[in-house]
Image (cartoon, rainbow, N blue to C red):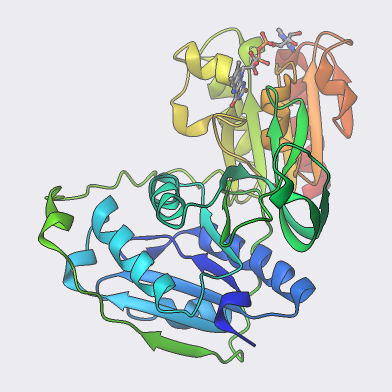
Length: 350
Ligand SMILES: Cc1cc2nc3c(=O)[nH]c(=O)nc-3n(C[C@H](O)[C@H](O)[C@H](O)COP(=O)(O)OP(=O)(O)OC[C@H]3O[C@@H](n4cnc5c(N)ncnc54)[C@H](O)[C@@H]3O)c2cc1C
């Protein structure tokens, strides 16, 4: 097996905290690699990375390349670009597929890598697959042919109303960034073994044009929306920010719960943006998503479509959310929520 035939994941870490999207990327990469019969390689860059390479192996990487140098303590575009390209260039040819998270880091770094290799990049994918492609276009005869083992980079398009399958079979690496929360994370297997390959990168003076003095992370006290098992979410139908007090009270009966919101509720200043679910907010995957006073616009739907069960309460029986909710209750949320709370408490024995 040649190195360049593999699926290569660039792991995302901030201050040595491996971001959940890295596990999701490994989950997707493992599936792609199984279809192709190749290995999963991962790259992690930073300083004092400690057990991160081992975690990546336990999550599905067969080989982990590490660049652990003081220059990479804080993320800057030029230093991380230099390190990533140095590792990718150490192979005989660029890998078949390179994946990054559609995070602040990945959205910044992936285009730099794609530009260096003069290859395409599909941003913000919600699904990835492998397949064949036959190109019949007459504009460029050199592109005509049937291409096997193409990366299908799939993402919502046209205001999220269609799923587009975007391909670039003519050039490797085929690159994509994956939306956080959209892919299923790989499971931990502490018995997995893999190879850790330390790399040393020479930086150029020009890589330090931007200096990060300090990174201050805002760590929310609320449970992370992406990890929550139950999300109680409110929309414009709440009628005002006080409505979220009802939701907070309701959510306390569930373990691992979080409060979500539609963009209209966020734009109205009723709740911070960190709670927004949807196209321009978070993609969530809870066991139960309870949508209260949310109409179910396509931009909201794309963020919740991976939920196991969607329960919607809306006073308009024609609200679009009833077309895709698993359970729908037509009624005023201020009357329905106290009844729902009592019923859930009975069922859960609280
Ligand atoms: C580029 C773009 C990106 C976007 N990104 C997002 C995104 O990430 N997330 C997102 O949510 N939206 C997003 N939107 C906005 C989206 O199109 C909708 O405008 C928004 O989701 C509507 O929010 P809503 O359902 O809370 O409000 P509305 O559409 O106003 O719906 C309110 C609902 O509450 C019901 N209601 C009213 N009172 C009650 C009551 N007392 N009891 C029960 N039901 C009641 C009404 O019947 C209605 O269905 C985006 C839009 C664009 C153009």
